[in-house]
Length: 112
Length: 113
Image (cartoon, rainbow over all chains, first blue to last red; front, top):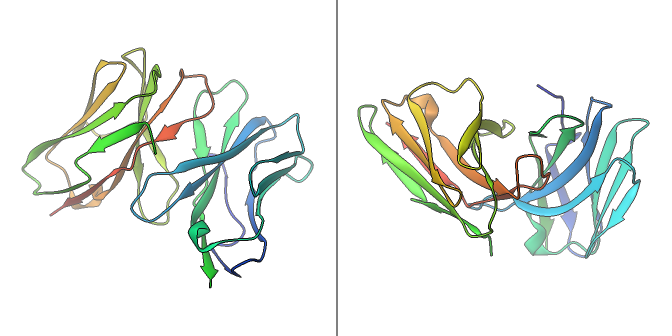
């Protein structure tokens, strides 16, 4: 399988601070990436995506950065809130393949 | 709120039982997926259905049997499971099989005794 992994399994941040969650991938043919958020007892929820022809994409309080040179993806959450506490994982899609490959996830804990 | 629903949300079964998991999507999508999520492991793709035809079976044991009667419904029939099959089973859908974004249901937490 593909090596879609995360640098840190857990991350704790103070409420109001910015969070950065990282993801590494190994296949240079990956052309599409998604970040999902999974809260306890729920299924993964789509947050934001980015294609390989972009370096940065912004959503509401979230930004995804893609560095294709080092095969690195990050999710930045601005002004982290308690409701952001969840497991975040990235998924990648390889050009020509139909399936997504998922990472194991990082657990984000927001400290009030 | 997700447009993909799953029932039951929790299921406990013995190794000799037969049970079924149900998934329904209200998004008008043409592709549906079954994933297995175990602790500290990436999501494992089990089956993919596109336009009600199975297009992918990732070496899943025959004790798991999927069924897709129409593009809105997907079932996973379970028979003679093992304790290591205990996991969260997630259903997802996408516009079509080549469309990138998949939307997930809440999952069924399965415990095999």
